[in-house]
Picture 1 (cartoon, rainbow, N blue to C red):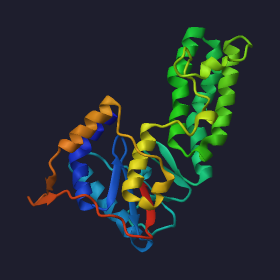
Picture 2: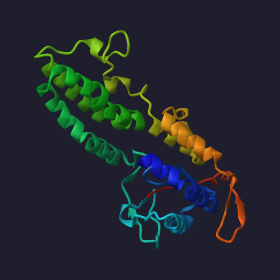
Picture 3: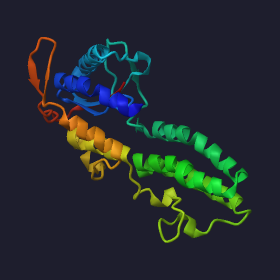
Length: 277
């Protein structure tokens, strides 16, 4: 599972972090994400160095580095010798698309494609089953995306989604439009979000972790974010606790102890680069 992968990768990722203290690794659950501020002239060498270290440390614990799924995204192109793919439009990191607006909206629509199809099929099911699926499964994916993307990016997708949900509920109610109480949380409501109206309020764990990374490593962009919140899911809390319980230093193959110091602040006027492994 993703959680076991993350726990198994902890020691290896500590070594990777020690080798690249100026690079943030905000996630290694299922995939590995890296985020760095590096001057454009040094970005290619920085990417190659991180890739080489990941290959070595992952190989040491029997994990294969997946070259075809390794993508690098920067504001401007860089020369890379490690064989990984450089993308221009954007990248998906921690489940959140990052890049130009068209890329983010296309990714959001792609991730919701199955959910749009399910909204068409729900009225054919038993009413109780359909309502449970809508409330606790189908609508949650849209809520996640809404909390992950900037409001102005997701707004057009949210309008399409809300119209599809309204149509689904109308069919479930045999032609009667849904009562406003359907969209209330508490007060006897069904907690089905009208996302286009609630975008400024929706938050999710993925966006909080992305905000944490931006605030820590890309302070020039901090004004674009909202305050981060700590993990709340029991599994995430357990993983975070296990990570913090690891030794504050690692020993390399020669037995030399390397303390894990916090990364230094990024240089001014830095190039933004992201890698997704």
